[in-house]
Length: 383
Ligand SMILES: NC(=O)c1ccc[n+]([C@@H]2O[C@H](COP(=O)([O-])OP(=O)(O)OC[C@H]3O[C@@H](n4cnc5c(N)ncnc54)[C@H](O)[C@@H]3O)[C@@H](O)[C@H]2O)c1
Image 1: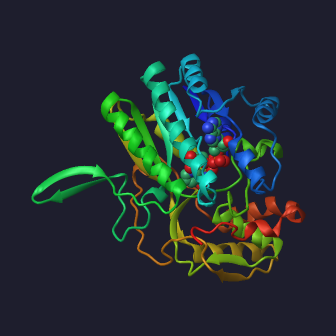
Image 2: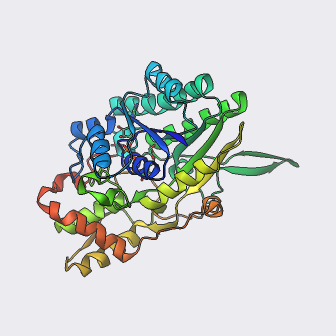
């Protein structure tokens, strides 16, 4: 298939591009290096150095990978994005191109403004570029499980049937996000649903949990093809932060009581899910929603797992609770459905001790470059 990947320089975009190219798809990647720029401005650069997107694509091709088309362009600029869609005529677009950091979106007006305008702007432009230039194209959009928040009832896959005063109807499942970033994802979903209803576009919205992992078949060909690895409080997920803290001999910092539960998945499973969604497209006029994660953990359980994995490498790790910089429930009910992607054929890779040990082994050579100041929270939700 002809696949356009927006956000192709990102943690998920780059391994997706290599994986799809390897499978014989014709791949075009677009990125404007927004994440690299924000990382520099907030002193949150990746721990493991990564070449820029054009160099990575060259390195991958030189190592025997298939060539891909690289465009350095801002998808929030309609002229540029619509030109790319008109010329490339994608059959599927994988839309990763957003500002994905919840803490960054809570830093203050400028960061919030950038997050809101960028994320909604890119989604809006993509919808229109597809309507105007490739109306049959399937949009595969990355949403987040964070759109649902942590309600005290079971979370369904995107939709809920409600009976009210004796009548029934189906609606988008209620969403109540915990950061401005997550709220932009809720708004994206509403925007997509609107254009699905009015213009009959085809969309799959993947409500993804936090992803972990550095190893994919293609990324393992050459160390310079590694996906971005952030460990700071802005771009680093809790798994990355704990692994780096373990490697640096810093106690693992659990925010508050540590009962916060989320659904996680391995990077290889993101690649599978996105491909399964693409190969089994939504119908015209359909907004299809899948919850994309394979297993769920509390923050305390993650800390225990990292502590055990570190012990195998003779690293002594302490676990410490610190005041929670976020406004969130620290103990709550959590039971989201996630059968849709399994029914399409997803074969999960679970978070085994071996997987965590392998990640630690990738991190340890960079031990000296770990900046301890970056792993502690620098952003609070409200002062
Ligand atoms: N990584 C996760 O754990 C996770 C979990 C749930 C959802 N998601 C979602 O998946 C998507 C990808 O996440 P990621 O972790 O790879 O993030 P990332 O920041 O590493 O990748 C996003 C990429 O998009 C690019 N980008 C942003 N705005 C752009 C624009 N206007 N024009 C062109 N390029 C632009 C960035 O430069 C970056 O390279 C995001 O939408 C994120 O919200 C990620």
